[in-house]
Image (cartoon, rainbow, N blue to C red; front, side, top):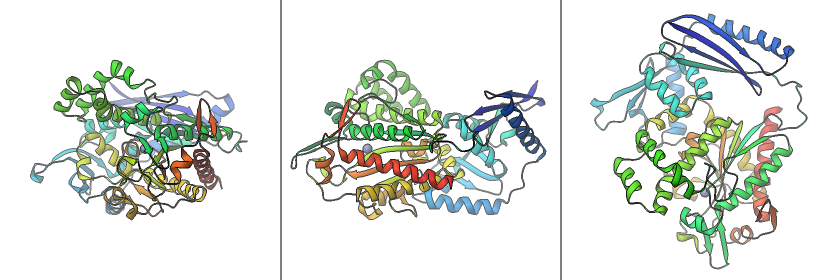
Amino acid sequence: MGNIKIQFYLCRNFVYILSSASATAGGFKIYLRFKHGAKMRRRIQTALFTVYCLWFTVSPAQVNSDSLISVYTMKMQKYLDKENNASDVFSFTKAGIEVYLPATDFSQKKLEYILFWNELNNFQQLFINNDTETMLKYCLEKADNPFHIFAGGIQFQRIFVPAIPPLPPKMLDHYFISLDPGHIAGDLETAKMEKKWVDIKNPPATLIEGELTFATALILKKKLEAHGATVMLTRDTANISAFGIDFVKWTDSLFIKAIDDAYARGDVSFEEKNYLLTKANNTEIFRRFFLLEDLRERARKINEFNPDLTLIIHYNVDETNTNWNKPTKKNYNMAFVGGSFTADEFDKPEARIEFLRLLLTDDIERSIEFSKYMMESLVEKTKVPAALDSNAVYLKDNCIKTDVSGVFCRNLTLTRKVKGIICYGESLYQDNINECKVLSKKEVKIGEMETSKRVEEIAEAYYQGIMNYVKSKTK
Ligand SMILES: [Zn+2]
């Protein structure tokens, strides 16, 4: 016999209300779970009861589909649809957003699922506590039915409960921040495998990007924690991947299962799977498969941590400077947020779900706002300008520029997969004639590592950017 279950969870400043319903619902149960004291519990119970009454007495909202169609069409064009072909896959109708399997022959178009206009809120709330894989499963299960009648359907609500005491003594006391130090390498051998190093002959300078990002993250983590933030690093040891093991251990333990899963998801073809399993050497496995798996794991860890803010840390190079063994005069700062999908990126079911998340939540808008503070701080501290879309080929060809100087929509694994507010920072050009000199100095000790004052400045710039953003939110 079917039923409806409603559970409330208290976590940080939020109460999570989870309801699961089966198709033949005949009754319901309420569970209350609180870690806090009785006084807090009574206050929350009252709040929850009010919310509960509202939730179940309000019938599905009447929606104005015309205005939603125009809002989401505009947003799709503004941030997400690089080549004007998203409408082949996502069709906005009176009923809702119909998602089709990509097909070359349009008469053969096959409906995958529909998100009805009056259940957009369900979709947005569901995404708070579910990963892309689970969301895809729910959407495929529901197909052209509404969310609330499919068996085992789950709905989430997240309600803000004011912190007690209301004024925290430290500015970042309730902030959960994840930092992703880009790449893995902490030595030249791994950096060469990863193809992420700069080796300038004159002036002599060798830089490993994974080392610069890691040092930046360690310095920044300390600064943020001093102000009360809870900080998570996606990797916390040089040469160790987001899985917590190095590449060799990963090939021995996780590789075979990972490639089976990737094949089942449609991420690798049958031929690629066989090649990687039987013929590929270590460098090929590393570049063609392991690095992508590592990025998926970073996104998974960040989403599980459910941070308020995510900063992905990279140092850039001049893409026209072949092999990066001579210096360039160019030097820019830039930041990426999600969006700017191209036609071939709609081929994977997970990418279609992630496109919908970016379209239907305000993650892009909030990430642009956060990135604005980060860019302003980077430009001010480094005295290096924000990039224009004419400054690099990939900015013109792969990105959509936003209204904020130096901030671009770009469909990278992490800008697509990491939920919430993100800034994918690409500071400086490592191969710039001046930067390569100052970045390669070993002047500052951080943990076991030695790094440069320039890296310290970048960490300071990000720190100030985060503080300025948080200040703007607490005014
Ligand atoms: Zn990088």
